[in-house]
Image (cartoon, rainbow, N blue to C red; front, top):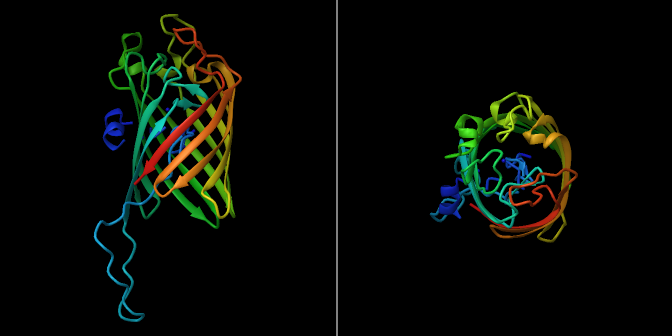
Length: 305
């Protein structure tokens, strides 16, 4: 659901979740990413494949000799996306797919000013709190991102949509929005990032699944730290994540809980293979008796374009 830092269940099937990820956002955020980790969302985040700028299919003309004319300016807009298969969609450590696989996809349009808009989506199942009877999550993201002397600032708003869901007979209770901000610093092959997501009071955060008064309509705060590093002269990368959610709300499993994980990636051209260990100190019992917040290993295969 991060940014932690976009299936269109249908879009993801078409282009091959967008969420760990978190993301997204991608993100998370994921969100995180859900445990995406999130490439944002996400976040959940949640976790997305590397992104590449769309290439012009026509062969590039030979560069003119120096002094023959001005260099063409970079395009004002760039478009990139990804498609990912994951063995389990985790949003902030909690499975959104009943501990089963998911298909995810993302599409992002970025302006040279730093403004961007994204859509990320994932298939979902078994997580009745938000998706209800639905089987898809769509994250709509708008933000601004800029880098100064190795420090990257990113802020925006993430809107979670659950099509065809009818929790407690009221679709409006499923969807919610969450502003986010993060700051990242890169030194050599290592990047450290701190993210905060704030979800104000909304119906979705107070869902009681028929138990009136289980949670009041409260806001929610998620604070996370991420480390990533590429191993020089190899296609390998390492990641580590630590996050904490404060409630009380459904996002916080009641009051609050901590999620954490670490993993590795292998990149080959436009493909990224990932494996990560994800865990929490919380409990979220599904209708089938499984704990959606238990520890687990998540495997992913993503393609960027």
